[in-house]
Image (tube, rainbow, N blue to C red; front, side):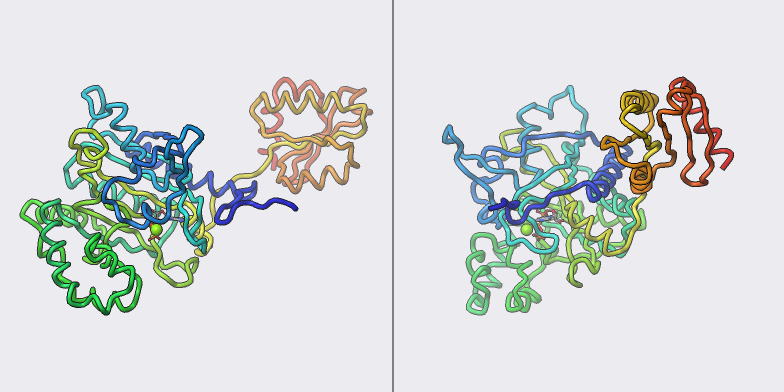
Length: 430
Ligand code: ATP
Ligand code: MG
């Protein structure tokens, strides 16, 4: 039986991978402009890095790819990027005086969640994420949000909605939690099973339940905004004021919470209503402030802000919106060799041209010239060099501009010496 890839995974083949490389490159360029440096952490971690005591979210409870390794260590494939990066931040004491403050990092890589696969939902998926440590300044929240928005605008994606909310600080959230439980308790008979279970564990999660019966109930739930203490309210007010200052449109959704428990203060999502997701609004980027996480993972108290975006969903959105990506998969030169006698010379030529910095391919199958030209076209070759025994004996070669059809015979040595001169000459003539 032929084996197939595991459920919920994808092979990203040549032809598709160029789009991946493009969205990754746009991200890398963007992060360079924002002075954010890359970090690479392992794709597996000790289970406890991701699953912290009291965390009752779906990601941690149901979606983990965890296992015991041969040394009986409890290991999990990382389901997200933040806690591994925080673990590294603490482990390497990046909060120390030798390091920049805020310490700004980004990651690009695979994440793993045991979910029911569907459009834009996989078991191995990829995230591009940013984490910024050591700034309490609301300007950092706004910088994070605008960085994420700028990423999508650089990709040419429009029709996005920015949704924000605040979860307040610990104290505000605790008071809100009590009020929410008091409101939900008498209604629990009408709630979904999941929400009943969450009522005391994580009542804020009930707020973003997708079940219709829950939605009806939470529509009249008390709002977190009425439970913010002065400090939390001031932080949120400043975030909003700065967004307005930057002319960034936003919607406040007080029922929005996040899938991970470590957030506080500002949280945000960027939603797309692209056709890619069957008309359902889908989150393409999400994040927020997490001031307590560094401490929870054994570091000092370090206010932090981050976000992550799903690459698969970005690509689906680009596709659905017919956005043409500036991908250059052309070849500079294809070398047509006629007959086994020129096999060594075409090998030398190909290597010499690549050494001069050109993208070059040649025939290896001793095919007829016509078939080789077909390949040259398929590969979008700008130029074709043709070498047969005749030319080889005369130490000449035929050079053809594939766009204009112009051809000329040139000394073989001129290719080795300075192909660029010939190349420029023929491009100019065109
Ligand atoms: P959702 O509500 O869609 O499950 P989430 O809250 O679990 O999302 P986050 O943990 O915030 O998502 O991850 C950030 C981004 O990563 C999401 O907005 C989405 O673009 C992407 N993402 C999350 N889970 C998956 C998945 N299983 N497959 C593909 N992309 C995903
Ligand atoms: Mg999820």
